[in-house]
Length: 179
Length: 393
Image (cartoon, rainbow over all chains, first blue to last red):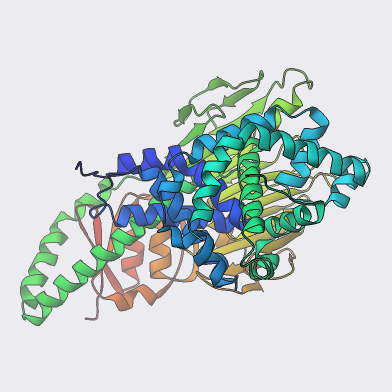
């Protein structure tokens, strides 16, 4: 088994290549840019501190992804989030780096599906799904009715699920299997 | 697998995703055994992740983050090394080799002329354009760097970077996402004029990330290290300076921000008024001229007091100004401008306070001799390490 040796050059490459993805992963759990940045930075620090023990036969990116997720959830746990949820849905999967094997391509598929949404559908998608505004707030911001927002949400979701059925299925089976 | 939902459930999950710290706990408790809702959460969370990435919402400045990490790792290493030096010194002393140690120090004395060779800082910086290209801006070079969308960056012999020639205003949208970064290394300083006319002086080991043009409703820049801002007045478009722990809102004013990683934070207002926000405090702090806001490392309170602003802003005017400042703090600042490292033979000297005014153009030897003239400490050079000791021990 090849031993992966990390020096500062490799660390910098890893950092610059993966930072963005890991940051948005943390953000999706935390919705807090400062904490998200701190957590991603801490994960790289940990990789550096453990560089002599790291013998990684799987991809380092999956390792980083799962570390970011676990730390994000731990952060929320400290914020009094029910521990059972964490152990049930996620931790029980053995800190599964496996789940992250195809994660980038899943996100990429989602991105493509979003890009193909019609213009108004996309602006509603942005408010509801990305900024997570309520229907009422979205309606007010875009100057449309709540019912129009609902229609767009339904259509967007239908399209995304249609386009992504295969990928998401894989991912979610993985989570629910661990029940 | 058909995943059903209704609009109420969707909105419920949106709310959790938007504010997990507030609603996460209740949500997960409520749906602890409802796999369908947990799946919905995970699905929508992934849409959010991918969408945020696509739209680059709250995009991090990777260069800045990398610098923070390397600082942290260096700091770690230095602490380790510090312990090793301290341990070996302890061994030396306990073995009663004190006179031998003295002899070594005396030998160092003879190398006194090395002091004259300690390099001092000058104007230098690295400009990183939106395309990721890096340009070294060395002392006194006139050049024009072409950015995308017809933007030109001028650097001149006065060590100032300026932006100009926005070819038409039609491509505002494209300009919105163009950020540049000006990075000033140790032993460096540089000046910058932003697109709105705001002037920024960057001190050594500092970095500023800013948009090529301020196109939105606000003007925002991100700072690591120390900078002095002279903000162009524009009440309709507030100016924000973000550091790791604070956000300062400005209408048009002059102030200094010192936000080095692993050092306390100081924001000093020279004129005008600014409003301070930080995750360490709830609410806002309003500063009036002469106020300094101080946040200790790991502290959770911001202390505001009236100060002699020269203490914080002298560097911009080209001198050092220390008023009863701890030796360790003085030397940390000098270390950014002169090429040396410090080793304290007697840790107690770190807390000795000194008063000094010196030109940044002065040679390091001159500054050392002034500190030694106080008759309290001696400073001996070995290589580029200054060994500081208490003369009375």
